[in-house]
Image 1 (cartoon, protein in one colour):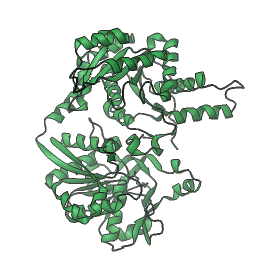
Image 2 (cartoon, helix red, strand yellow; image 1 turned 120 degrees about the vertical axis):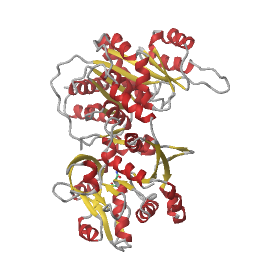
Image 3 (tube, helix red, strand yellow; image 1 turned 180 degrees about the vertical axis):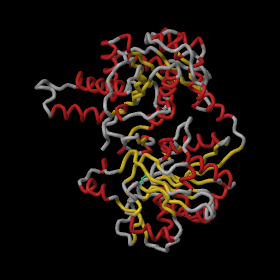
Length: 554
Ligand code: GLN
């Protein structure tokens, strides 16, 4: 269970920017919110970003990734939405658990308070008690961060039943302090091929839906395939009650990293400061970000990485959002090395047929990210065996590490009946098994709380691949797993050449398994999720070593 971050003493006056979505989901509210946060940060303002999900899941841990996308784990272990990852990456900082809420969490708190007589005999009502709890949490997050500006992104799309009580919270906060609260609508303006013209009506309708619940847009971020023209800005201004200069053009771009620079070029940070009557620095310091963006465009050569997972398909479409932090981490390290990453998504099921393994030859490196359950596992094991034997750089994350250990047990130790408790709890050799500390929780049926979550330290073996990457023996990484390498097999695996180069400080948990450099150019599996700490301005050293080895073994 996640610990709650301690509240600091408040000594600043906070201003609030709400971000809501119009017309459809997936228009880029998360990137818009992160970009706004970054350009305000660049003006010397202390900004924090908050995400609200309307689901009744108490946290994102129990949501299916193919429906919801990646589960992003915060430092203290809270399982959240992938947008929290965007905030951390753009702001280059850890975000505390106060900054994430779901309807499940909000309602649970209100009901618990009612059970504890916290409402002192009064009726507990949807309004104002639910919005009051939402507002309490928003203010707690702002206080914890001592934020001058808190950006609050409300999941979903305006017009849905589910986010009405959140919109009510905006209305109540605005009513209490009109100068301290603004609302940004991130909307979509289609350019239907059959018409050949950008249409504003869906956005007008979305703004109307917002107005109906007493909330008015101060800014409209106009997402569209091309930039919005003056004529349509004027139309939106007239019908949506915003100033023309507050309709911000946000056309599709090749790279999301350009977005903050484009928004800054359009004067958005100064406009926000005006609207909020906020003093901000006269200079915008986006130098480091610009340096990163330059690197993304100045690559000398390519590196081909195959990511083998099982969550890629959604109907007829390919979903890469499920592994967004992994993909981003690959990109940051590639750019750092002056390389353009060419990432291919491969479904692991296809490799159950060993003939298909030949297709892996064309990649410089193979990565198997985290995963759960039985689907595609045999395919992943075949891929790992192929990468090991053909000396293709291999990076296994979480399940990708556990399966690398299992592959070694099966094919090198010749324990053909070896398995992980997750797929066969009756197997002869449970090389990967449930952690003692998690057994009790599972027995109680508390699957939602049965994982080892959040940041834990590990100690690295000097001279190992991992040590060379981190250049330190003490590391700390975020986790999300229920199973671990079974200690009973560690000695035997080590005798057969597998090196456990990272362990928990008490030596009980295997955190990293690798093959020595003279045996394999890069074969490293990690029990944790390094991707959650990879940042554009701070690429992750293990990803950088993996990409470097992949490129060099081309
Ligand atoms: N399913 C494995 C476990 O629970 C790995 C989890 C993961 O890859 N995040 O231990």
